[in-house]
Image 1 (cartoon, rainbow, N blue to C red):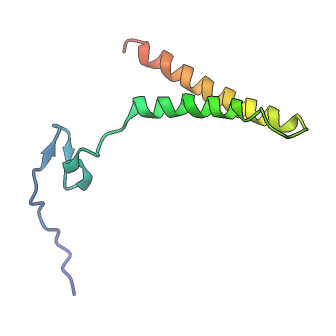
Image 2 (image 1 turned 90 degrees about the vertical axis):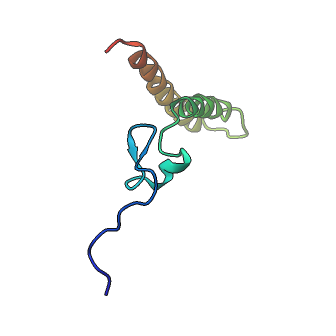
Amino acid sequence: MAGTQLEPSSSDPVVAGKVDTADVPSAAWGWSGEAPRFFRFLGWFFAGFLLLMIIGNHEGKVEDLWLIGFAALMIIALVRDLIVRRKPR
């Protein structure tokens, strides 16, 4: 039966000054952070994609309203993020 003791990490304990590789093993490869610029780009891309999906072969307007609504929610969240990031703390 295995013991309940944890083995100490043999790798460098600190990467980028903040992340312990024992807690986040992928930090040793540089994968511990977030990519806010990439996520913002994806948000704008998919908001535009939703609006482009209005052009299609559907006849009802309910689909258009849902697409516009979700795109508007994404744009509101992105604009709010833009405003919050620019405010001094």
